[in-house]
Image (cartoon, rainbow, N blue to C red; front, side, top):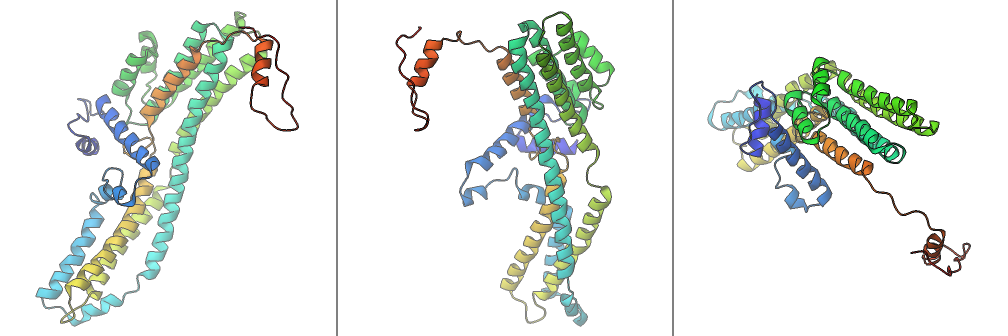
Length: 389
């Protein structure tokens, strides 16, 4: 697969696909490491010149693979060489007067709208992913204090499995046979019998798996109510409600993925780009000078203008296309492996957290009395006479 192979080459000698043409887990890990490193650059506030030295995660890397980019360069330098060594017809100079400013303005508007829409969809998907994590944390927090430990462990196990299954069913970049099986073996999310059920309902083909796993978690909560382990209706409603909220956030991811920007609009942009950029390169090459008015400095400066136009037009289009699929295998996509691993660790740490000592009135009074003043309208407490160890 050339798409996976290109990423693999950027990461070194990593097998990109298995015998079934699916991305290997090692490849997914490699992409994730590179992705997280690129994200870190955005936080590091690197100097201007250091930013320009990077290749992965930049417009240069994707620009060099775009055919229109190389076509415009070929057109420009082909005409400039012809101007110097060939017999150029007189009428050719009139083509330099072609008004491309209006076309370029319209194309820029359509491109910016395209990027803005995909930008909103991309960060909307990120928000839903964070909601999935937060709802699992909510269930773990309530279960850790309201349920027996073994009951809570199973509910959180099912929710973490549902979290993983949701991404497997949504994106071919995270297949069942490599991605799910590896993480399930590592974290023991589902038993062999439960995995067989996931295979029967085709986890890697839609959202049936995460929906059923969410239902298993709700069934366990209902069983705890029936067994008298949950006697507070508010606790039961919170556990069920947060589980349903998790499922709703995952439903939102599937809904957003099912309705991208219309292909008509994408085709329209590509068609305009295909016509506009070669025409711009042609016009710029002719306007750089003909006959005796040919100078290398003019050739180079005009070429830089063509290059800047390519970077702007092609870069915006490719940026929008990359953000249109947030859960793919590009370095710029969302960090699915990181989300799953961090949610598993954090939710289980919440579930296995220990309780503090019982409340001591004297100790709490002393702690409040010794704290920094909180304002003149709230006078400090008098020191306690005794302190319970």
